[in-house]
Length: 129
Image: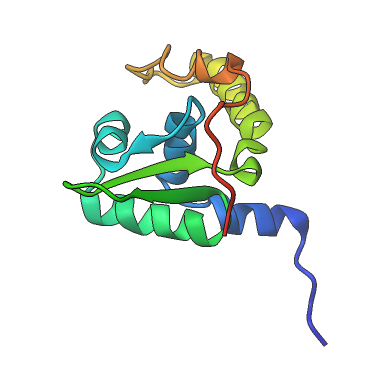
């Protein structure tokens, strides 16, 4: 008999990690190439970014599209399932803004997620596998 996990446990299993929500935040505006994504996220190694993107692709949050051109071009975009995390991202931002009064350290990117949290769904979607 298989034990059913709590929905919160399932959600945490899919989005856990230091970088996944930052990747999601950057892809909310539409697809991005690996290099552009790497620059936007900050101090993440290429190895870890690749690992996180693969996990997110396996979980159906991100789709990877390879273009047949030289040099090779690969673009990552959120799937519909990945986009469905936007309300969670908005709630996290709201909570973070309210919590800043209790924490002395303020984010140097305090406006970085503001436009993302007000975006409509991106136009460029890829279906998951």
